[in-house]
Image (tube, rainbow, N blue to C red):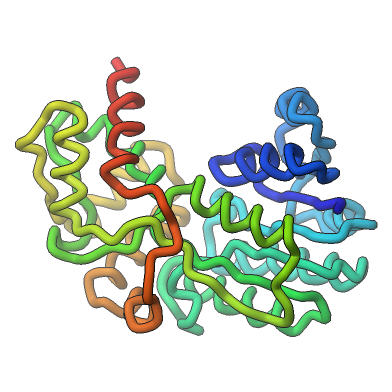
Length: 294
């Protein structure tokens, strides 16, 4: 199989590329960062340098492949940008008659006007599902890796939190579990028609997150705090996120988690967790990164 992978060498794509290469597949990797070309080549993949909002580049990148993995990079942080990139992917898939597509969507894609990226993911799922290709939409929960962004807060103020209460049950996903699900789908290409699959590694509350992370870093008194929306946004911007990205991916999603709208269908549909890496196992990874930060 020949495949094109978006997402450069991010938390999901790097693992996916390694698994596909190990299984004997020919892999192209799209990256906007030319400095990553050597690292991609070292994995025995072919680097394709360009931007996902360049229709001509994406059209060429999808030429002659049996499968593509599509994801919208987080720096495309508004609903309009997410939809625009999705439209470019869809056009390139259509132009090249790509037979198999694994699309990274997200929990909440059932909501046409959903918060954060959910409404845009809904649009892109529908657009992809109108294609002739076989399409599998993966709907992960919040990424475990997002919690690395709280290291400075924990070190400086000995708290962790978000703009929702400590007793809200969250559906969380380890990027490696998402990569594993993507690999299985692309390697076997045994999905047909149009379908979606939730990829969730664990279900925990904010209080339990604080307990697991606190135990792993030697701070058993670590508490989850609900922050006001304005204060949360200001903090994220100070950390380097754009206001648009912070609002889309954090603030609006937090509001929907608080009122329950974003996760309701997931809890109604799921029977077993599809991921394997529990949050307490991730807490050990978190502790390693935490101790590396001075």
